[in-house]
Length: 228
Image 1 (spheres, rainbow, N blue to C red):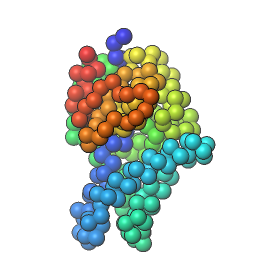
Image 2: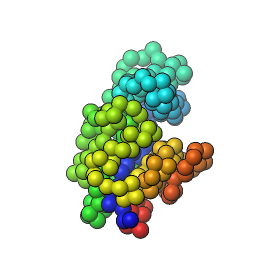
Image 3: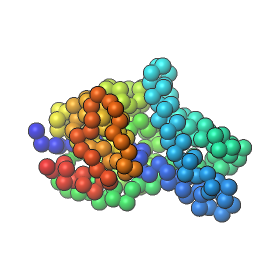
Image 4: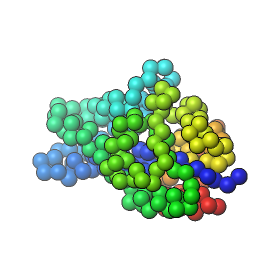
């Protein structure tokens, strides 16, 4: 069946999760942070994801803003930069204004011009996602922004992927699901979506029951893939 609906993960897929730390590292007076920012950005993202998985397993859900703060606190403490409340506040402020990857606006416009449904499906809380969408200026090329807060558990729980069919009244084989997280693309493939893993870092494939269907280095090829 032809693809009718393109669904995107948000953080790391449409929005550059390292941009907050990168911007702070370039600001005057942040020379100490600048020496640590790549590792902090990496640990911040890793702990953020780990906390979503652990909370899902133990059944103690909280929203994505809380795990974002918890992940940052761990990363700052690991680099012994946890005694600067202004640094923490600045990093968290910028997380509401993450930069979109350069190819995102044109890619989404192309999908909409082709008559496809477009939406975000994310672990992010609705207010965080709306802030990022507005900051990136892509709200006019998205039909919806779906958050796990509707079901109270993080991806890759199958009830999260159920939200797509409920919203767009489409079958699983009409959906192209796009994520920069290999585990997310793999889990969505196992669920029944056609999936594309945007593997910007050239990482190995996660050892999971299902593999992504397509492998890309950025998002520019998504419109062609959706039409194939």
